[in-house]
Image 1: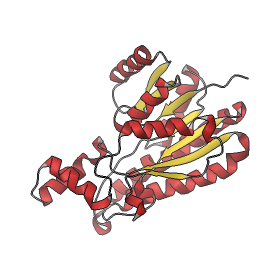
Image 2: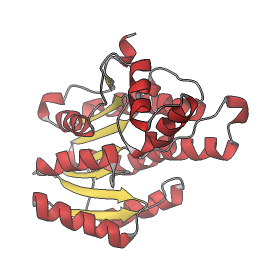
Image 3: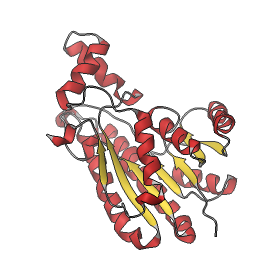
Image 4: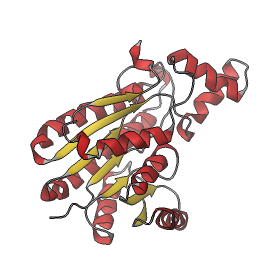
Length: 260
């Protein structure tokens, strides 16, 4: 049976997810883009992918903080284009506050989007991967899945949990031609970090650009952001035959942050 390569990348209308989708499409993989943007705007992005890369591309809109929405999204994808054999759980949200001040609804929302959504998409894609005897599950965790930072209780809990879930998935599927791995980026210049940069600039009476450099240097020896395109290249490698024995790992791409 010929191998189908069709990828779902959650949170792929900007930032890391968009870069991953482009790298997969360049390699000839059909893509399912996902986000909260309007269907009209998402469809325009999918058409642009098709025109630029010559692959099949569609857009699905869904608030994946709700399991029912994920069920509906996965059913829509299956009916519209067929099974997913590369799953990239990238969607994520962030909020920072001390534990005693952390809003409970924000805790619930962050765990829902950053952790539970990945469980639901994974459980719903595994059967098609098993039927084909091949699949790739790549979860975009974070350096905060490996180490902690203050004021990020929910984010760290979700990203640590995502690594644990990935290891279990890898163990269960290792003999079935399916791998499951985490990628753990460090500082990446994406919309998720904008508010943190602004807060650092205000707290330190500095410019926005100086705040970026200040935050980088506070954690990592590498003096620049991690490129979203480089994260996409790592995803592409994990989808290759060269990575068929790599499973259950948590790969930092963090500028040396976790080398401390």
